[in-house]
Image 1 (tube, rainbow, N blue to C red):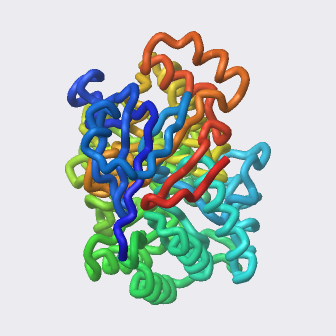
Image 2: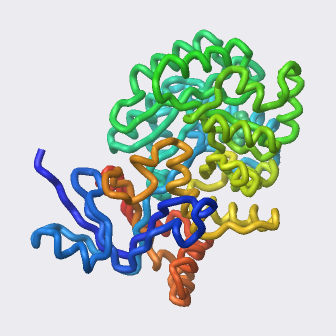
Image 3: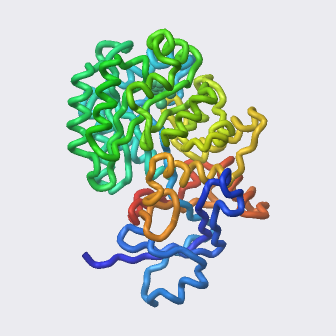
Amino acid sequence: MPLTRKAYRAAILHSIADPAEVGIEASYEYFEDGLLVVDNGQISALGHASELLASLPADIEITHYQDALITPGFIDTHIHLPQTGMVGAYGEQLLDWLNTYTFPCESQFADQAHAEEVAEIFIKELLRNGTTTALVFGSVHPQSVNAFFEAAEKLDLRMIAGKVMMDRNAPDYLTDTAESSYLESKALIERWHGKGRLHYAVTPRFAPTSTPEQLTLAGQLLGEYPDLYMQTHISENLQEVEWVKELFPERKGYLDVYDHYQLLGERSVFAHGVHLCDDECARLAQTGSAVAFCPTSNLFLGSGLFNLPMAEKHKLNVGLGTDVGGGTSFSLLQTLNEAYKVMQLLGARLSPFKSLYLATLGGARALRLEERIGTLQPGTDADFLVLDYNATPLLSYRLKQSKSIAETLFVLMTLGDDRTVAQTYAAGNLVHQR
Ligand code: GUN
Ligand code: ZN
């Protein structure tokens, strides 16, 4: 194959470390007039345009973006594909919301054609919002995951997904059995895990909807294949936490249920964790597990405020999740807008550079993919965004007042949304243009 080499010139910003560990100034690199060079889908150079241009052949194709910021693609560590059609469902908190809205909506994915239609809409929406990697819940139906991976594969996206396992406390039309969930997950793993840039996640919905037998088999699957992911929900809502205590009285608490069935580990991502206690955070960190912070969902469903400072104290890996359809936006910029407000209500701060970290490198670390995505380091996948400073009249006017990249970044995260994402590139290919 001939070498395809392209270069992109603009202001360029990426996270290189967690501000909680190295301080804000050492956590990022910013090139006011930067150049990003891409060879065959991977980043081959990053630096100041003035320094890099001299080293490049005179005939290289350079795309120059004015009034724009190049960043790594965003990483959504928690989202539900089959809830695309029910974002913004009125009036309930978690358990009633699941029964009233979620389960009926997910039941439609028994139909292959419906699964394919929504998979296309869902992936377009991710890319329109600048999300280049997501950890995705399918429905209980394997066809929801097949449809998703087929659509992702066509665009050579780095994506992770799994079929929901749920064999109790849900309507009959939406449950599997311990055995069928094991066999169906296994078939999906054989077909998709490690194919191109796709990965599989074993996906027990949450402790209340799985029998001990199903959780046992989920743990068994994780032991059978290397580098599988595990995704589930934990401690999102106080009623849910009480219910888990009733269902598993022999366990110390909610996390201990998952721990008992060997579901913790370096590729395990637990959504929400709003009501985790100190000991549970410590255990999650000790096992290398990660938590997905989902502020738009936690506010929308009235679940509570995720304690990011407590997670930081334990050096727990945290990524951001939109949690659509409990969450109200596909945009990680809007998710950061709400994350900032959650921190304000806790009397804490969320700096724009910590926010950038959470949406990019922090998410990549939560998924153990920091060697491939989350930064613009040479050698990594060319998954990146062009954010438009003139996306809306207000953003344009507001950014003209900005005195620093910190201020610009914060305003992008406060006023920005899908309109801000002018271009999305994945593996060096333009996969969305506004
Ligand atoms: N807990 C169990 N299932 C779900 C779900 O679909 N969404 C959210 N937000 N929490 C859950
Ligand atoms: Zn969820």
